[in-house]
Image (cartoon, rainbow, N blue to C red; front, side):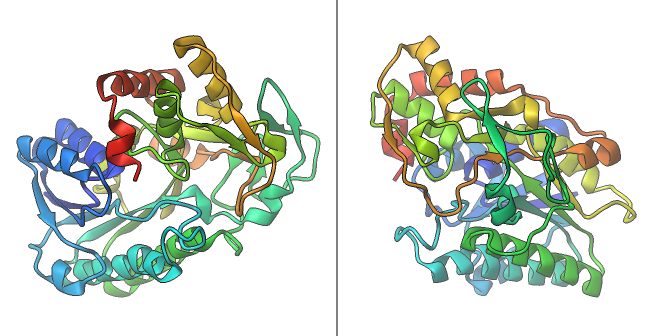
Length: 354
């Protein structure tokens, strides 16, 4: 079997490639990356040392994709993954759409040509923001938790947000590009007869992640804490109580491998996240950092940012029932891994957070 991984030199792409190679040595892996993200070259060297071919290509350019050899499967791990992309002034809205949607269309044309299966690494940010922002939450142990006795939106419980919850806008420009990519992928698969799986991931984290405040927050927070950089709680009264779940991307590989052999009668869309057990607020992350590295001051800005929500945890019941999937890396181990990497790479933020 031959598998193409896009964004292979990013954190998720490189981690999935390495773990998939370790899981099944019969798979021939190759990948592409446009190296737009600082730090990508580090992963290119490591992948090539493992015998994984890496091509310099840009998904936005159809001619780059046309030049690639055929494959049996495509794992699309390439994206601009920031919820503020296109609205913060760092990237334009057109650039965001070209990266996350036009790039997917070019890949789907590739799958159509070679009858290759397609696995889209999507995101929890496809879920509608207004009702999540309006959840009735309470403060509990430096974190927000949903009040159990309330009228939850359809698809939301204290266990998290399930696949049946609404994806109606607003979801952010980033979320809109991903939900549009999902719909196109499913349509292409149905019309041109190739398998498609949509995996909606929570926050992905681990050693070697390119940490920035708007993406890779766990890595950024720990690295910035160690280097005594300014850290700030934004919105939600400046307390840092907003909660996200966390998943190591190597835990995706078992289900990715099963999807490549799966029958067509399974649900095409699946949540993959850390769940309640692997969730944490920024304030709780600060408490963890203070115990490990020593205390420090955290600035506060109570003004809300666009698209922020108090509690976002994925309900992975479908993945557990249909795929017998479970989280393999507990949150504490993920944090330890990031901290150990930070100690070994004192210039990591300078390298990767531009």
